[in-house]
Length: 280
Image 1 (cartoon, one colour):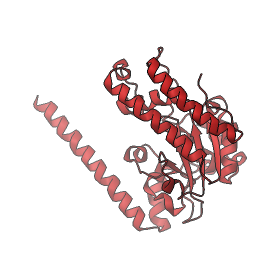
Image 2 (spheres, helix red, strand yellow):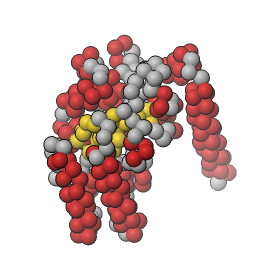
Image 3 (cartoon, one colour):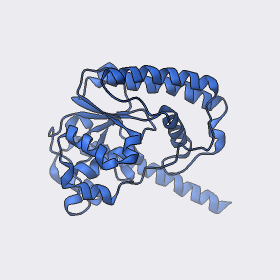
Image 4 (cartoon, one colour):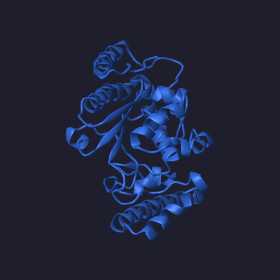
């Protein structure tokens, strides 16, 4: 018993210390743009030779969003973009866990233009207007709803219990997030900023082809680093099959609501000459 208490105490102190370290790093980096401090913090994550990843110079990059509904593969696509471009991606809401897992761009404010794009799940008009362009990542909402539930209940590297996909909490998750999915899709698709639409399912089929579309939009050349991408396609956060439960957790009422929302989003996609959302 005493030993278990000792271990718990050590664990809590380690978590607390890790949180303080992350906050300190954020404060240091955001108040000091010197190349020496940047290289010191980034060095452990850089890699070797032509596959190295770095920060761009201050205000060197246009402010481009990498936007999606949660559970659509945004973190995996960030990994691919970093491999393809050699420039860190950022985040409109810095995440300590992602930083600790190697996403160094979490420590730089996305408005500084030092990252090639910035992750966001926001959809408000004022937020969209802050960007000069956007990559909209679209995924079958049924799969995305399950993947996001998995992340919330089991984290980035594990899988949740079957009980997570039934009961009042699951019903609330689906009801709220179906609305959220439609708002993200509709607001970004109907915005006036330059936009490229990428389908998660297409990336699964041929990541290099889809990365070519993204790097063209970001004004970087994929051919210089295609080998870097092929050496590490999956990264540490891609969990193929996290949405395959082996059964359908959605009730008929859920299906009716989600299908109506898919129909409205498909109408907007069609008006832009784009293919519909994957639903298989």
